[in-house]
Length: 541
Image (cartoon, rainbow, N blue to C red; front, side):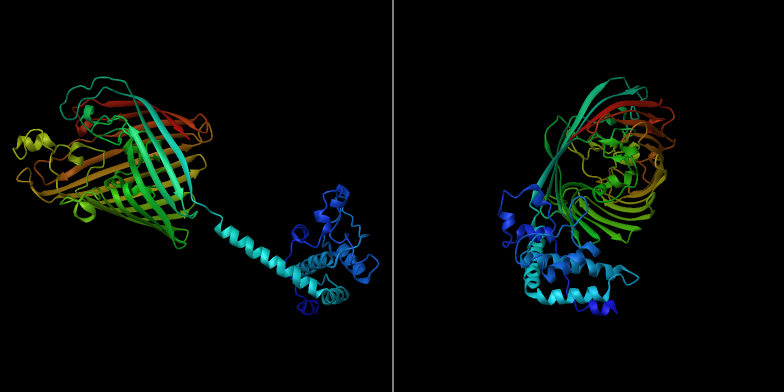
């Protein structure tokens, strides 16, 4: 019955302190000489129009004391012995209306008496004009506040950077191409990246990455991409000399509540908008030291300009789609977005819990088959300019023509966090590559079957929060079967064994010593094992 009576009372949330601060009817607010004691006076104990002896004043005072509508003095008492203006009184009355409404809405028993409801109704009738005025002013304030909140974001750009400085060397091993022993030679290399992250709405991101580096990688010394470090790919891979250049330019924005779109103008990679699942993917700045230990190599098949889409299907499934063209800005024949080298990816990521992720990945590529890892046969590195010159297809010193290939790659990736400090994972990848042309008789048409796999073990926060101890064991891309005479099968098996410890020295500095052990380099048991040692220091700001 109390609730039925209450429906006749119109109550709207009002913050009493806001009314006191904003209302022009309160002369006390304009008086800088008001004492500290007066500043503590409660909402129904000030000014003149409603006197403490009036029935309305005493009725409201009784309601305040019974229902705690208005805060009292710091000692919890209420001292209603000063007159109020009618608007101050109305503000206090409105606070009591809100409080009683809250009690009725949440109580399972009748906590508000019929007499109090009748008193409130009578007070509301007598001060209806003042209540309406206050509520109108509050509605205007709320609307203005909402508009400010909706439009308060302004275009901002955040600058961050990562600098990698590393000392490394190759110990032992034979060149996989020539069979000659690899000489020890300690080197000091670097890579610097400046990231400009710009947002226009607070939900989008214009990402600009400027980089420089001077590390060519060890493939030219060891004759194989096996074990090469993850930060080898400088801006100019042929002659990296710390020249500054644009590495990546892309714009990401939401499309609805569940979809994110990435438009890439330059330098994008599939792993920019696709979860690679592994714990060790720090793109050379952190995580694994080697490129192979960073992620499944099939993610490296695509780069350039294009489009990426990530869509959430509830909390358990994430779908990623993408298309990247390696020569998207080149207007020449057999180039551009759709006539040149390209790669497309599709991935379904399952997240049955916060600790488990499983990714199923498919990549199709054309004239984009070098993952930067594995044997020479798997990367087609033997088809260089010297190869074509020896067959008199090009002249000495000319650039080698592109090898027209079509590849279909399939991958499965798993990460399982057994506990807060232990994460196991791994991946397996299979690629079938078809040579589509003989390039004027340089080689036969045919197919290659390429396999790779890895098992990973990580210990997050090992020794110190932010640190990471990691191990990788696997086989880099290997040609298991070939119908191309010029691309033989890799007869033997080479294993990739890696261990590293990323120690978070400070919030901005991490030091990562590690060792990469390559057995039978070039997938040739006749070659001595090679060990790559590295000490990476990462500065982030």
